[in-house]
Length: 185
Image (cartoon, rainbow, N blue to C red; front, top):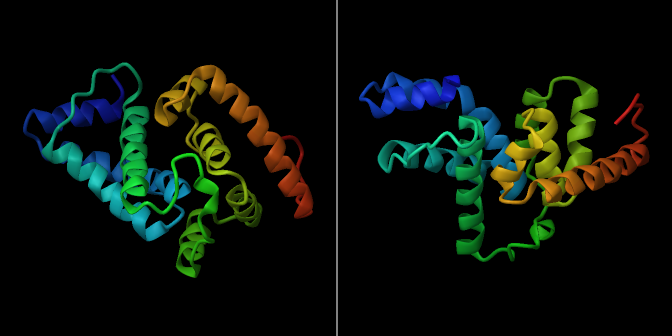
């Protein structure tokens, strides 16, 4: 059984240290994933906290149909989409209309992505559509399989395969504009 699932079942059986381990292991990645959806690091942190709060209070049932991480990221994505609907900032399909991220977010990104090439890559990803950025983030940074990414993004496996292909081409084009030197994307 996966470590995240073990910790969750440990928490459900009454051992609070299970939730502490889950938060420690998944908070940073979940925050950055949610940030790709809402395009605001502070809001992403709040939604991440809300996701963990839901785990603690409502204790949704983990059925094991996917990895725990995939399930958790899908919960976070749902919270982010709910947030966007409630605030009516954008329509569900129009994630691209969000404004640029604030300077504080760049500081967080710089700390998280230490090497210069990774920072340039991340900045190019921000110029991509939200779906492209999400699918690349989950596939390459979180090492999700296409099936896991499909579950987290609420899409079919075929849609994810097409998104990955188109997102890679779009990213390659953006990187070339930036003069990025790469071996193979």
